[in-house]
Length: 95
Image 1: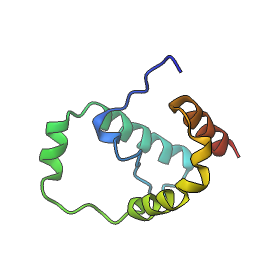
Image 2: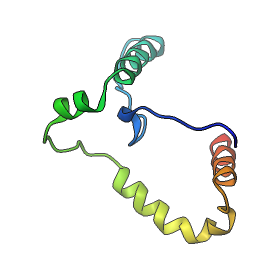
Image 3: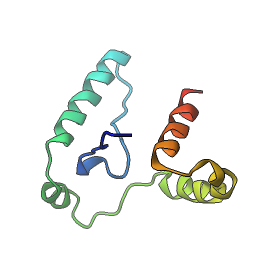
């Protein structure tokens, strides 16, 4: 893989988007797109100021991390390079 994969600081823990019950999926998508654009422009210092010392909201990151670590030995033979791992993830996501 020749290209570098970049992300903005607001997405280092994953891509989380607001989800609300709007009258239509198109309106929800517009809200999510606007949120993505807003967060993309925010520097790390602004995010730290906004979050402060507030506790993180409940999420499934810890459970998903534990499950990933539990399954690592089963898939270790497939993960020989970054390129191969990325391709393996793409194949899994396409299923």
